[in-house]
Image (tube, rainbow, N blue to C red; front, side, top):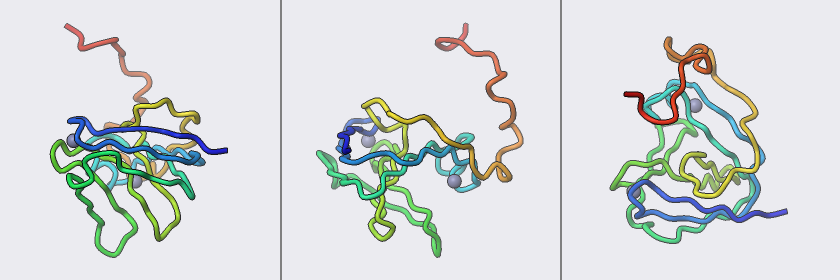
Length: 135
Ligand SMILES: [Zn+2]
Ligand SMILES: [Zn+2]
């Protein structure tokens, strides 16, 4: 069964649709994901065999691959938002969950690379929570 998902970057220049199914959903706390996200972890969906179509802003895309690794990021060169990476050599599309405008039909399956997490990344679900910025 195939699903159509859509997403965009923060400034709206880049828009895409993805036809396929999310099979894995990992929250990755590795040092590379911490650097590129600026926060505790990336939230990456993996869609093997999916088709990624850029609807707009393809000319605004930047691509970065960490030398000698599979670690790659595609992002909007205007606003810096992470958008999907079409990992053709691995036959899958990696989608940062936060760039989707449609609901995600699976829930995160695991926290991974917990041995490289930040020293402040502990029991975050116990931290006080507010609907908006507290006054
Ligand atoms: Zn943008
Ligand atoms: Zn990672």
